[in-house]
Length: 290
Image 1 (spheres, rainbow, N blue to C red):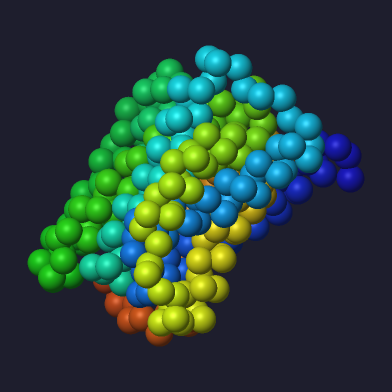
Image 2 (image 1 turned 90 degrees about the vertical axis):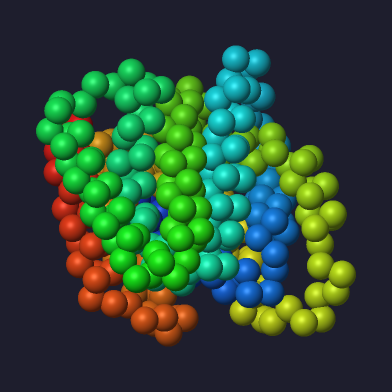
């Protein structure tokens, strides 16, 4: 196998592992918010991952980012370290993880939109057609009975997708200079002082009533969702190409629904599956014309 083929194969393998890890984030967050407040969960997971990221950066002797990169790192931090975890944790107090996973189908589109804004990319008109169609499908799903039961949950998920797309796009642009895992590590370290303070202030008065599944979920979102997943994901993008390996993100809603049903015993309705399939088809079409 030549180096090009080997890099392509390894890229898809690493990218697949990254998507598989990210797929457990929402089900794990759903379990964690049963015993932890969304604010403490967000700050604690960022603090734990930030301390590990700091150890990695020091251990590998990484150079500090230049001053001009700090704004971009702050955007990444606000998007994927604070914004997405906090907004999804708040949303999952109102809706099931299976319901929230439908919205993840829009994350590649959100990333592409901010890629056009921040990276100067100019997709063809057909791309925006598929993007709008996917948005209409998700909006239609949200306006069904589940939305009437909890509009706050759906609106929070939409906000989470927007800020996460911004963080992904900004991180992808910055990773060309700093490297993939280095970007998320520096973003975590940048937010670490504030997250440590918030963790201390929002800490529950007692952990006696925190069940074991909540602790396991906290460990998962701290170690895997916030750090390990990004190591595989960004490595895969670098080895196999952003456009090609990025297609693997379309598998995340399917994995997420399976985990929600298998681990949390949440009902997965035919409407959820149908909308997820339709959104994935729209995203695939948009990617083709990007």
